[in-house]
Amino acid sequence: MKWFTILALALAIGLATAASPFASSSPDGLERVAGDKGFAARGESRDAPLFDYGTDSKLATGVAGFAGTLFVFALAGGVAMVVRRR
Amino acid sequence: MHIPDGFLTPEVAAACAVPAIGAVGYGLRRASRELDERRVPLLGVTAAFVFAAQMLNFPVAGGTSGHFLGAALAAILLGPWLASVVLAVVLVVQSFVFADGGVTALGANVLNMGVIGALVVGGLMVGAQRVLPQRRGVFLAVAGAGAWLAVMAGASATALELAISGTVPLGTVLPAMLGVHTLIGIGEAVITVAAVSAVMSTRPDVVRALPQGALA
Image 1 (spheres, each protein chain N blue to C red):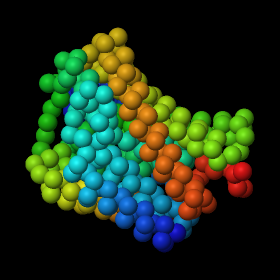
Image 2: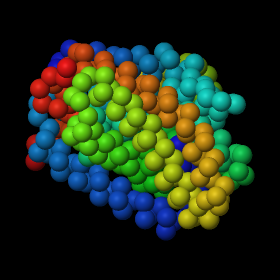
Image 3: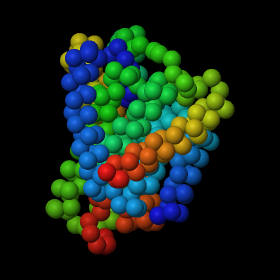
């Protein structure tokens, strides 16, 4: 399990860091429908530590992907460990 | 498919949060019973992979993109209830750290992109195991079909919530959501089948939806 975990996590971090800056920046399905059907303006934007994955530059997106993936791994693993102990 | 704040009325958002919290809460209770030493890291890795893959928007027709949701993959690896926990973790981080998906709409997003798809796929895998031959190709085909259905079910639920909120009429939003997600669902199916196939080749023992005993 150890090697499987390490390899799978490395793949996830690699994808989030190296591939995400080159992902399509077109609106996704719901964003597109919201634009086409005229309710996109109802959406409220707000600030966040890494707003929209650092869309300013490819470097920022890659760093956001790297940090986000590690954080999600730690949080999900942490939740799993805490509930298992009870 | 992340709903931002402002698209749903507070009533609809709350009505979606109740089943979402229920499913995630039940998933956490199941987790305390079902998670053995091997599956603790699997939950973390699945969440990390789903988060990473969700960032990789792929182009579909006409200036639109789609992205992986992951409920089907998580449900096949961990079962539908733990999959709901995985998607909840991913969506909480996306909403609070990346402003992807509203905070008030979090329950709806967990329901649409997590719980509904996970239950659709979980039910489909159990049903298919009873009536279809137990072969690797059949298992992967059902996984792919389930992934597509999970996206379509999530898109339908999203459309319904928007319509009940009075944001857009159902007759307008439902065909539009189903139309674009017909294509996005194919991407979901391709990624799900590739990932499940890779895990089956390396660690078939961690795939919860696999029947006991090897496939032909």
